[in-house]
Length: 102
Image (cartoon, rainbow, N blue to C red; front, side):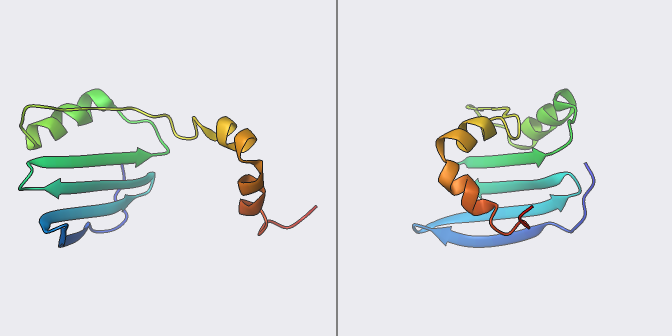
């Protein structure tokens, strides 16, 4: 992964609860983190258009956020495109209106 900007960090409150959110862009897409300290919850997302070695990355993330319950999901980018394209044809058509017509 190739960072292309420094991390952008925001400290705020949501529903009276403190939250820290951080995001950085990588050449392959972006990485984000949301931490809710009072609830001892954290969400970490890596979006990448290029494959990376999960067996290297995931254990290092877990080590930074020790705790009981950990959930992990791997979703292939574009994996729902066929469904969205056929079930929401009108929305798909609107998203392409800026393209030159041939």
